Image 1 (cartoon, one colour):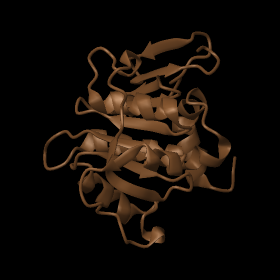
Image 2 (image 1 turned 90 degrees about the vertical axis):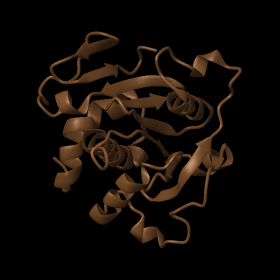
Image 3 (image 1 turned 180 degrees about the vertical axis):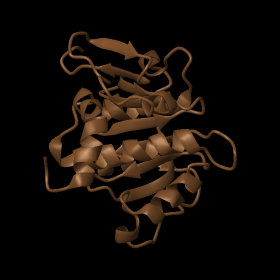
Image 4 (image 1 turned 45 degrees about the vertical axis):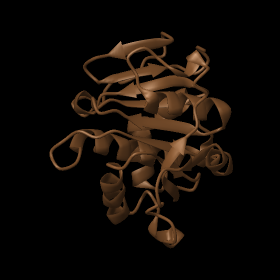
Length: 207
């Protein structure tokens, strides 16, 4: 047990997802907070409809270099201390902004650095395009393959997918996920789906 009950809570839910994504310790808390936010967006949607978004965590200088603004950044010019993922009021702002096209970029310390970014994808590389998944997932695969960032996709079908190293490392179905938090993961197979928990996870070292 740590001195931070919130950290213990997040670890109990998303710890194995972070391990599957090979997340470094210095980024772990931020990744878990952003995962929780992604699950909330997938569950709640906005104005009665499901929405999708992309959140890219870490390696901020390189992700900025490999992306460009789609429109005027709504986060630009605001004090950094107001843009932290742990702030409840800011989390609600992110949920509103998630209706815009483009990706959020999140620094390792949990501060949102940019919103509404177009992430570059090499359209000539079929490895980034997966059957049944759209360009948002291709962008997540691409940015996680070409940088040290971890990408989280919230799809309009309410599935949260985690990309690292260009691969899907975990899938979360929020509605099922919240029904059961026991035995969410398995160490005895590379990838195993647990429908009762709404999780598919790739075990580190399997790929």
